[in-house]
Image (cartoon, rainbow, N blue to C red; front, top):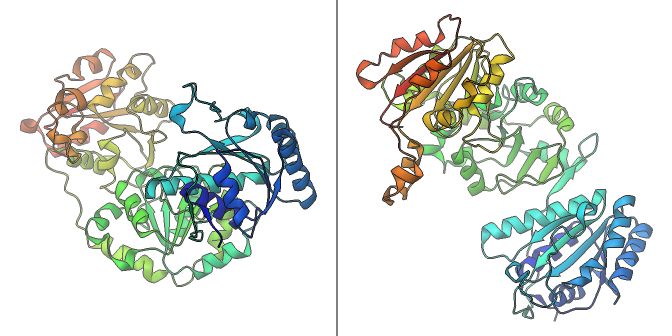
Length: 526
């Protein structure tokens, strides 16, 4: 009876190596890698070649790869064994040989603790081969991470050597007769045209959902996504810079009541562009796990935001995707748009954070630039339709508190269009230097929603139980931007609940020879 190691990370490695067509493995002796070697030896799809000297083993693997024209693996134990493969890895790197180095490793916590055969194996080959650290599998999340990273490592063999460093805890020698489970396989579309298999996936889709992430207004992908929105279901946040008339932009509100609606569950997801803000759409797709998920990317990393990606596709293929088209997709698009049409417009008259932001957006001139800060500002803005030809910018690369005001100043310096920065108090005070270290352009408009701290933290379930929420987590304060704004040459107006008139927000966009800053002193109600 065939057996294999009980270690789940080894099982995922073996299954994906088979799926990616790796057959030959040069195996070296050792105890830490023994569970890996045993598993390889028990699987009929592998051919193992035992070699004692690791330096020689890696070069033998190169010779095999040269001759058969396919990736070959070499597997060694922990410690200095992996260091002996450095010459071969360097050779493979400069000749783009698909050499897969698999090194067993001790638990991370024992590195530097004088334990035997234990050293830092992560990035041991420097720039010659990227290391993928494969940890133990404890739950669904670690299983997903291991699957993603091993897929990523194996796909990179197209460009040269790759290093998989797999951590193994004791006991090492538990075995099972259970066959390998199926594992999700990720493919790359790197050619000038889509493969036949990829084209078939497009044509077989009946419920295709296109996700448009953050894109600049001049991004050519944005234009293609805009055209696709006229025919297919396209979920687009304002940061995508796609006009709202054809998109599903109120998807968060749709999913509040319809997250389990079978009509909305996609069988094909196409992700275009950069970051998205909504947690709800992420959870919706992670839960429903569509069978096919493509991510458009010109990088080398596997990006698996929805935990279900099956193909990474170069951006040059997006035109072909649009031209190939999805058959019978109109009813799925209609299901989303019917629910969106039924949603009442969000109110804008009350003196609460979200409605103030909605009021500002509704009064912006057409052809303006909207610069959004992170946290509440970018989330509240999504609930309101944008004026025609609005360009939207936000620092969503890492979603930090810093630099939102500076980014808006930079935009204003580069255009004559009105630039409207909507920003919370903590983000404003953190970045207030943006107003004094440069001559401010007169087309800059700043709306500070000052709720006395990080009000968004009040919405996190469970955090309200902490006695430290207001002083430490939310950084409660009683500061105002007034003196600083005036000192920096801005026209300034302050609004509180008692003197707020929704109509007066329009004065933010009056003609002026200097920047204008409006500050709204709210209670923090979202």
